Image (cartoon, rainbow, N blue to C red; front, side, top):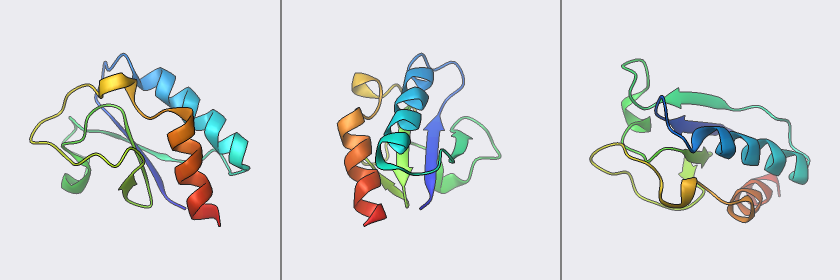
Length: 94
């Protein structure tokens, strides 16, 4: 399972979303490992840019099933909910 945590530096929703991700991984019994990508950094792959911050991809799919946009911005609602995270993580663990 590959998990990518996408954010931009200074995003006020990034820290709470990280905490939810860690809790969701514990809930489904998965190791707390993921890659983090700053969408404003030139070292971030182009395919991982253009998502709202924070966005969490599981095996390349946004757990909230939102499409990329033409520019970065804050995620409405502050990123994925615990329910959305747990559902996405459980689906790939089956």
